Length: 213
Image (cartoon, rainbow, N blue to C red; front, side):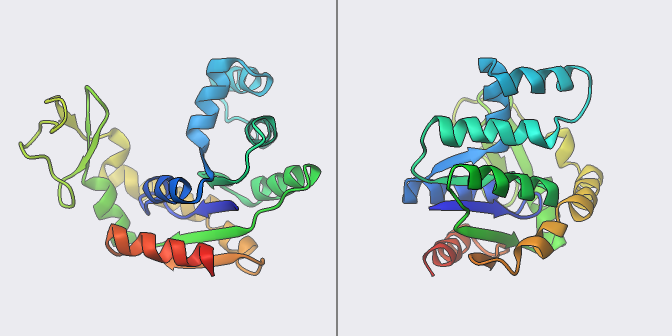
């Protein structure tokens, strides 16, 4: 099955997407990972992206779609779950056109929703280990020792983009750029909307139900 998973920052797309992809056998395609891999491997699209990034410019939609095409068609994936793409309506249209060229289509479009207060609480509570990169949360999954990673003993820190003022700006940008996807997708076959404000297992159960309905 081919799935698009989207929603605001902090809603749990990455965590739930990995879990769902593992259970269904789909390939979890996180846009950030695809971009870094294409640049590292110096693919044609990756070289184009690097040129824009080194110039301090946004990578154009057509280059991003080319990276996804390399991954989906080049690796002959049996099914995929897109996480972090598309971010806007032009990207969604470009994705559909690219898939049509390969006689493919999106079968499930799942919008994960949660109140803004919950998103701010989730994001502002995140802690990352400087040594191993493992993540904790001040409220939901705190470390055994404050400020220290349970796995390696490394120092925990808060990312700059997880400060409350930065989070507020991220959510504003999301509303301006990405939320119009909801209007674009909500009348399409396969669209599902789930409440992602609850506990992790409850959200996952709702996600599975949305896929299987």
